[in-house]
Image (cartoon, rainbow, N blue to C red; front, side):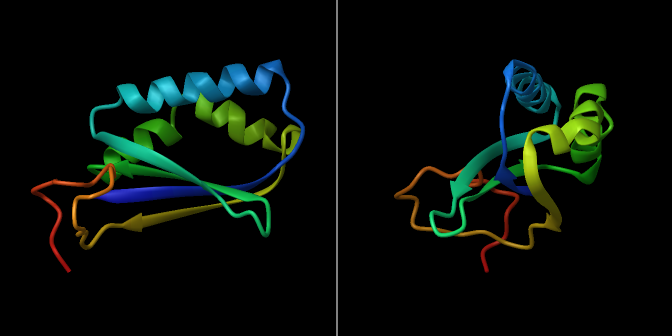
Length: 112
């Protein structure tokens, strides 16, 4: 499994941003191998992180190669005040199952 974490500083959003953002979300969710996502905001810095979970690097790359994603990358400076992307391989996951999480109960995730 893999994660792609997109951390960014908000800028000014317009209608085109919201349309493109929704299109990318729909595309991601339609890709075989998409597991789920979660978002976090750091109140001290104002930064937002979106974490996407994928069964394979091929599934992740399918989103990265999609025309809407490419368009968003090319125009990100219009809407964001900076960003960072981290791609990581999941080596394990565990929990007490008391909170909802995209990887909860997955049999292919090893306990660490």
